[in-house]
Length: 108
Image (cartoon, rainbow, N blue to C red; front, side, top):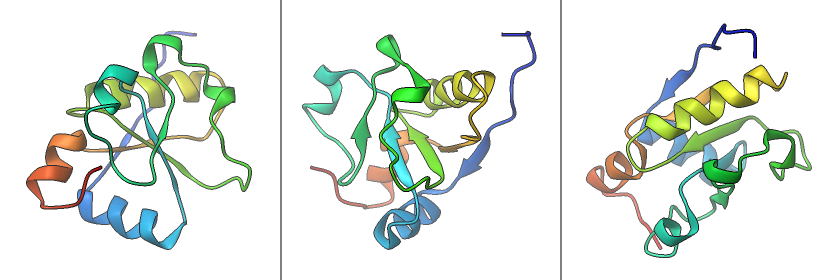
């Protein structure tokens, strides 16, 4: 990394829910397996930050990637790591799964 952190766009719960339902994004949950075993956003894929390799994000259709975590801190870090690796993944779910649940969206 060159010390310059990429900027990360905050997406609202409503934007992420809409795009996830439309199949126009890949939602990547960067929490750890013990966290996602308890609850997760339906349709999200797990790529834990502890073993994060941005080029291993499953995205066969080249869709925009949006990161999520518990509250929004780790998802920003994941986006910055991905951008430092040369990937155009510059968005995250602001407020994480806490905001998702607070807005009344389903979890599994």
